[in-house]
Amino acid sequence: MEFAVKFDNVVADELQEKVSFAVTGRCMTAAVTARQEENELLVRLMLGLARPLSGEIALLGEDVCAASEKALNALRRKVAVVYPTGGLISNLKVWENLVLPLEYFSVCPQGEIEERGMSALQRVGYAGGLMELPGHLSLYARRQVGLARAMLLDPELVIYDEILAGLSGDQRDAITGVMETFHRESPGRSSLFLTANKDAVREIAVEARIAIKGSSLHD
Amino acid sequence: MSVYLRQVYFTGLEALKIIMVTALLIGTVVITQIISIAGGGSESLTGKVIVWIVVRELAPLLTSMIVVARSGTAIAAELAQMKIAGEIDYLESLGIPCATYLIMPRILGVATAVLLLTVYFEVAAVLGGFLVATLGWHVPWEQYSQGVFSVLTMSELAASLAKSALFGLFIAAICCRQGLSVGRSVTQIPQAATRAVMQSLFLLFLIDGVVSLFFLL
Image (cartoon, rainbow over the protein chains, first blue to last red):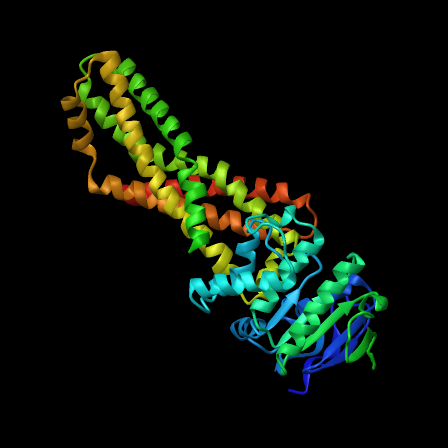
């Protein structure tokens, strides 16, 4: 797989211009977008949650636009997204959010799920309650849980959407350390950092930086 | 499975108290009306009429109306809030289809709960009616139960349960649909809940009429 993500002349409702870019597989890439709102749309387009008006999108080598819903669900399971809000479901408790995909897909026995869940939370340094609702957590704690859930999925591609925005220096350092270690753990893993602020990803040791503006690709 | 059980708990178990109280009051009202119309000596008639009115019509209808008011609005508002907050996308991005994780368990959960609540309603109304009849007019259990069981046929029970199952399925489907129909503004949440209630009530009466006609013919 040469590219983890590839956009080719993509036109979508809320995109200001045609978008083309490619994220090389197996490396850490920072993608700087024009606006923060575009990040969310790009993620939705990548995962097939929104359809482009024209153009082609490939995710992990598969054509997203031509894929069936079943194929898309299978493809989405290879990708983990850490959203700016953590991506947690508000009516599920922290623990339920964390192990939701593992329990839904019954990937391993309950005992192993508990073991893996606790280990992931320890790795991200989560110190809050397991039975808390996401609404009671700080932004940092929500992102920690979102990151822990992404780690549990053992994904081929991790998309971090504004992962460091709004955090203190210590919090950014802690999360950056975890993300970098997690990326290196699997040689086939690709990591994509989406941000509208190019300074926000300076602390991350990315191997490539791209600017998603118009149809041009800047390395 | 956990979403289904949670739905049965919220819709069924948590509504049990209000269903029981309503059923007892309905039983009381119906018995009082029968005796005031038919007068003394109408012991077996009281049992028959309570089956005709409560089991055939009021139990499925009132139970469903209570479920619409309690759980229908909650389902519509919850799903609308999830949609606006982007949580439906969060689920889908995990490869978890919204239809199988959020919608189907809710529809089946509400249908199960309405079915069970209807049975509770019928039992409570029949027993409540007897309590009033025996305390107020000294109607003996033998005569009252004779009236009840003489008209409580399998067909009556089937019609009642068919109605309640259909009501439950349609209420939940409409409320899910309305909840997921919102755009991006939080002001659409109460609008979705209102639409869900109005459409559910209209459909309840429509299905009630159709099923009643079907069993009559």
